[in-house]
Image (tube, rainbow, N blue to C red):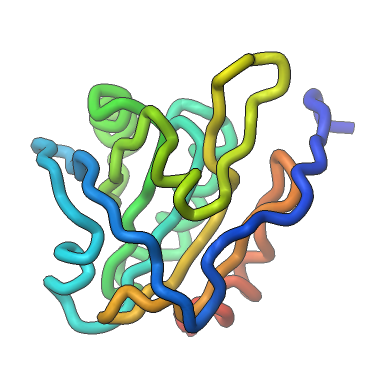
Length: 171
């Protein structure tokens, strides 16, 4: 048995394939600096797909597990672009990048408004007014149209990564 309780979150009201992904502007954090960036501008910089990955705060075991798995599977080399969205502050993201030597970049969304706009936020049990994103993956085309999606219905829940790679076109 795990040392934590699995919580059923139920269905989410997230963008489905064929729908436009909500655009947003947040600090984009790299291992060197951060600056405000807009998702649509970031997607427009490259041909191909952008994989948008939502995780809770970067210091959580859930986020660490997801990002370690993606690094181990070389998503940074196999996808056109992989970018995270986390409820961590830019300082927390920078610390995570330094400590984990992660090859990815992250949008910092400490107010969790981006997750709310994607319909994937959930309240933390016992913490009034505090929410975080569910673990979620969205493959976005060059026009920011959702081409594939996976969203957790339990906390914590992780995808079958082989199936996920098929869904997101990484095979």
